[in-house]
Image 1 (cartoon, rainbow, N blue to C red):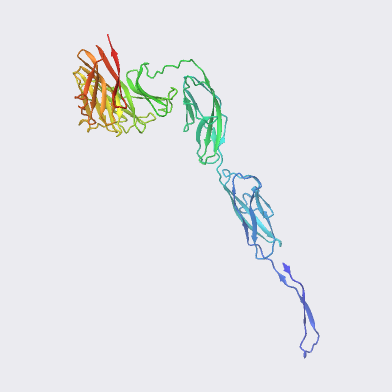
Image 2 (cartoon, rainbow, N blue to C red):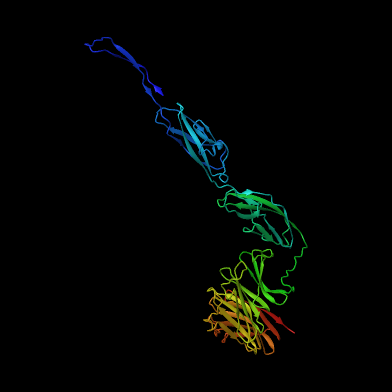
Length: 498
């Protein structure tokens, strides 16, 4: 309540009044104060992990009376759930402790504004905590590991090696050497499973310190490391045995632009043999990133399947060819694999194709992939009386290409009892060179044929499209074929003299 100064007033009666005395009295003016009507907080959000005693915002009041002053306090009542987490200094609201969004994302407090006359107004406020990205956390030390030279090594990080304070954040694992350089070629790391594996080779005996980094979706990371020592073994690496009867053979090899090496052949099981495809790192160790252990086997049936050649497509897929025993005779057999060693099920049936030409054994020995994606396979076909050169062209999906010699198949007789095609090259003009051997006239000779792109013999080559050559009195056998830059043909051969 406010008062104003005293004022004195005098009143005189009219002149003709019976009473002529003058009376006077005092009036005091009183003004009543009013209650504050609102409280404002300049900010009601705060970032998580800020330090204790951080100022949230400034308090101000609305009051009908001008010039009033106010005091602020945290009071009990509805909405005062989290008052103890805050304090007030003057007109500033402060946090008592560092907030963590994952523990509590919002606070409710009740604040009172009191004017100098003791009148007050209460209001409930919500203070919200901003969720900030936080760095991953290393939960435990990684133990030192030991690998033995020439023996497979496998180590999987414990499940709780790293964690992230932010709920739902995804961590990506990577691994390098301690100085940030790449892991040695014999050792691989799966970011999906957190697994290291590989086989240290003849020169891989130096101890390693390996750094593992966990990175969240916003780029923050944590690092952990462990030491890997390698026990040296014999200086002679072991011979790789794949089948159950220790009878494995390799027939084809290809070097990849990554430095890895592909090898194709067969591996014997207890009852039969299967196609086998292996990938090695550039230091000669099986590459665990290929089919999980560096090798993959493929069976076409219950009997023997033997692969003899391979070719790479431009998209990285791998074509492997050979023969498959169907119980009566053998057929051309093809399999196509993805670059990771898995069968490509878009090719043929489940990634595999078999084709028959003659009434007897059909065996594939060479394969080429054309720029169009079509596949040419060369080998030998037995017609019941003798064997001939054989060619089959397939579409990219493994079906026969009927634009090639009307049915996709070609056989060529050199006149001998056995004509075996062992190698093939495709010229830049699309013509196809096939070389091998021909048994006839008491000896085995080089045999060479050239075909047009439609499968017909190229009669501009030696007049008939084919020729045989003898160098020795007895046997001459061609096993490889290459083209020189000038278009001349180079045959790799073996000569037998008695």
